[in-house]
Amino acid sequence: MGKGNKKSVLPQITIEDNVLKEAGFTKTGVSQLQKTIQDISTQLFEKSVAYGNIDQKDSEVEITHEHVRNATRKIFGFYGDNNLTWKNVSCQVVEHVLTIIVGVASSNLDKDWGVSVLVAASALFLIIFFTRLMITRNS
Image 1 (cartoon, rainbow, N blue to C red):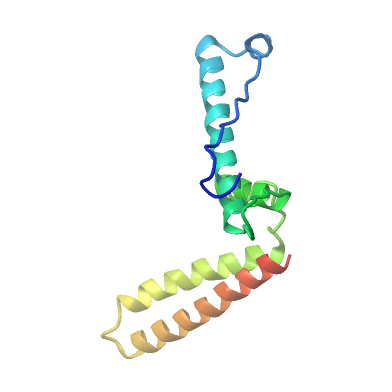
Image 2: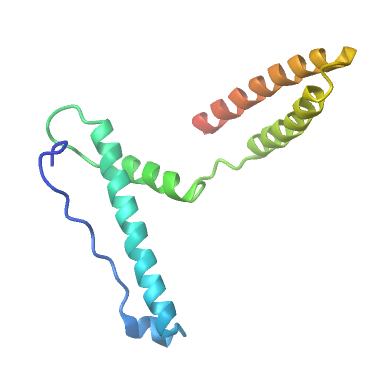
């Protein structure tokens, strides 16, 4: 399936109603779960194909496990992702603290310390942010 060459057939994924009813789902619960499964599978399919199209080297699109994994991360955030290391979390905590400091400094630009704290906190924030991105990409 090349980029735009053929119309994609969307996946039809369902769970049998009787299985859901035996698990305790109500009629509306069954309906909502089936709709949610269909919506998520359609999103996952479309995003996986989109990632495959981005990496397309010739006229044939290949959707690899990496494309599906990237689509899953795009939809569910950290689902299946083990990047929540202590370094990553520490960087995020420092980023939040620096964001607060930037806000306080921005409100006090008329004071002597306001501009220097704003510049220092902003620079440190960017350093920590890009460090966290490198940690995430390398893990």
